[in-house]
Amino acid sequence: MSLRPAWSDAFAAGILTEVRVPGGIDAAWAFDGATGAGVDVAVVDSGIDATHPAVGNVAGGAAFSWDPDAGRAILAEGPHEDLFGHGTACAGIICRAAPECGLLSVRVLGARLSGKAQVFAAGLRWAVQSGARVVNLSLSTSNPDFYGLFHEIADEAYFAGVTLVCAVNNVPAPTYPSQYASVVSVAANDGTDAFALDCNPTPPAEFGAPGIDQEIPWLDSGTIVATGNSFAAPHVAGLVARLLSKHPELTPPDVKAVLRAASRNAVPLRA
Amino acid sequence: MSPPGSVGLLSALTETARRLFGAQACSLALLTPDESELVYTTAAGAGAQDITGMRMPSGRGVAGWVAMSGQPVAIDDLRRDPRFAQDVAEDTGYVPQALLAVPVVSPVRMLGVMTLLDRDAERPGADQDMTLLSLFADQAALALEAAAAFTDVGEMLLGALATAAGEGTALATAVQAAAQAASAGNQPSDLTELAALLAELGRRGAAERRLAVRLVSDVLTYAAAGRPGR
Image 1: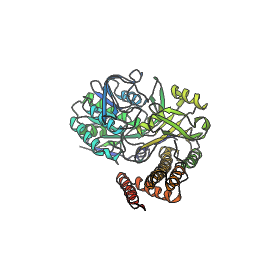
Image 2: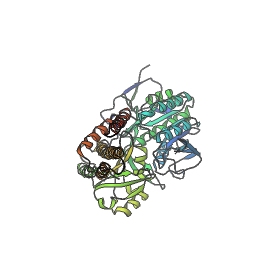
Image 3: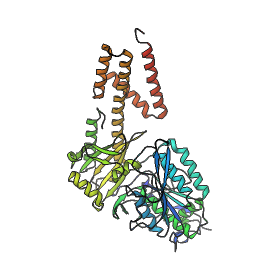
Image 4: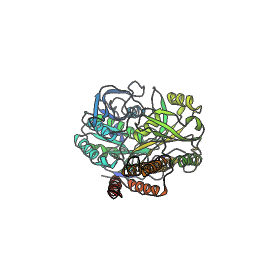
């Protein structure tokens, strides 16, 4: 029996119900013939191993860490490694639906926890201002002290036309920014292919994408089989990049409406 | 690493989890104070003796990811991860097929990682194991925080009393001896009760924690001012 991370029960067979969506837009309209070309996706995570065969074009990035003396996050631009494998996994998954997108590696997780939320916030802000149209966040903070800060950055992203795709927590407790209404929040469904998108009629986890028993890229050019909402979010980030490469004029609320309409459980309203 | 007083409870927790989940092994690794390493303090099942005391850098690997991200992760087919398999095989002689690792986290800080190796995934309800193991990790966090609070508060109160009594006096010597006993996990029962109350306040949130600290500091100020002979 496969594990189900928190919130993923909503997408289990027999539980997910239909969602009614405006007619005229479907998965073919959104995704057919597109590759993600021309769209940058920032991966705010543990770094990306650009040499992994599953990882496409890493176009740049930045690594953030905590300076305890200055009491703030500091930035080191340029290439860096992935110490854990998780960021590389996310990057490889994004490339499944958007093989020609550009990837920006924003490393916010290293070997220390102190200042973690501030480092995460600094990395996210950099990503929002980087020119990327999509930001994948397979991590978030459960610390309510940072609710306001992350909300401010999520609002900046929304108005700047940057879609934040956030994995919801793997255990039943709120995290930020995955809980905000402006982001595209994602939990794992049982799907296997990159286009297996579901829409949850009872949020906060709004979308379901493959994240259970997924074969994912890992360290040393290898793969592992893993389960987590972490691996569902980059599937959706890849779909958003693919969508924006075909329809670049869409804004974050448009993107969310199209994702709903392109979901497997969407039923178009009649004209 | 584990505060005195928590060792027995943590051993019972890991053994109970191992049996309940039908796992080959269950372990608890705690972050060192400088967060640079994870130290396996408690383990039950296959390779338990070998893994206990093992240290690994917190900035790499699956357990490192769980501690740094605060997110659980489940991995099957671990033997495909050559680095993991080699490290673990060298250290414990047991190479698992699958692991489920969850963070051990208090309301205020990351404490460590709890890991199940090769759980029985065919049990009824096994699809909820990520959430279930997190409940065990919450128990471990409570045990660790309560034990640490007992020790911290006991040492602090007794240390303050020794200072108030005056250097070299018989009372100071007695109080210092009591402080040492507290560090060793043999707290006087009234201090234990006080510490439990303060720990409970602390768990309710940051504001309550600050209130608890202010309360104790006010009591100490009052006690020092009211000392006979002043």
